[in-house]
Image (cartoon, rainbow, N blue to C red; front, side):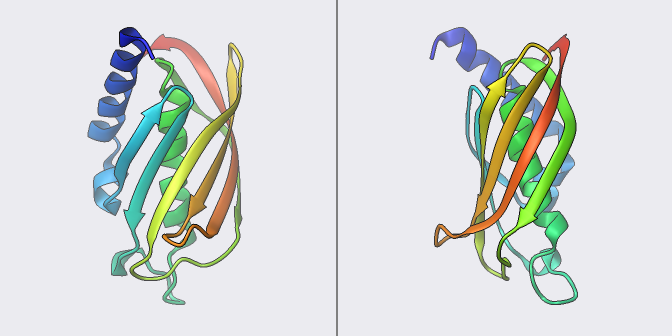
Length: 140
């Protein structure tokens, strides 16, 4: 990776980390950002539980969405979600460590397609998302 690319990635990572309030509110940690990919993690806490005492689906979605945002903006152009579909595969429970891994499947001039997988600390898949981003002409 060249210096300019690393500089862009750091700028995007800092911009999202400082301005996306859900990251600190949910206790998320940005582990890695590379061109077209990102890894974000968090621990399921009491405040993330639903009435069934399982991790709320919106919490899992939010974790995956932050990884998606980092991956689709990592090229230095502003990108926002056009469409996201999620499949919940197994429940996440209090105390579990969740990790969202976003990977770029296709990058075009105006859109990008991403797969985001959420795993628990045992490596078992909790959720799967397919997401499409619209890429604006604006640089970040």
